[in-house]
Length: 152
Image (cartoon, rainbow, N blue to C red):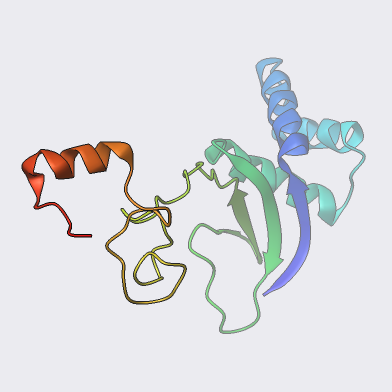
């Protein structure tokens, strides 16, 4: 697969609008192509690729990033979303939405998930939720009968 050229979303979006305006005026496809060539300063093969890329952009307008014009070597298969027109393939690329994901919560002991015992990676102990001992609420719950009082 060899990349020949690419057209960005901004250029294609403007070209789709210009093509629609020319079509409503009743222009022929040849006149539309010539007008697009003068408007966007393209000629020859690049203009032909541009007009075909506009057609691909119209079909894939949602979240389009760019359209790549690629040529395939003999025996290569076209990518999944590629549109083959004559000898070239037109591959639309899309903007990927990344959604914010809040950081994962730590374990119940307040430490990292991959460490043992809740003591900074040292195993053993591990009964305390805090390195400073029980909170006043935990002490009150423990002394009310939730568990026997510790012997000193």
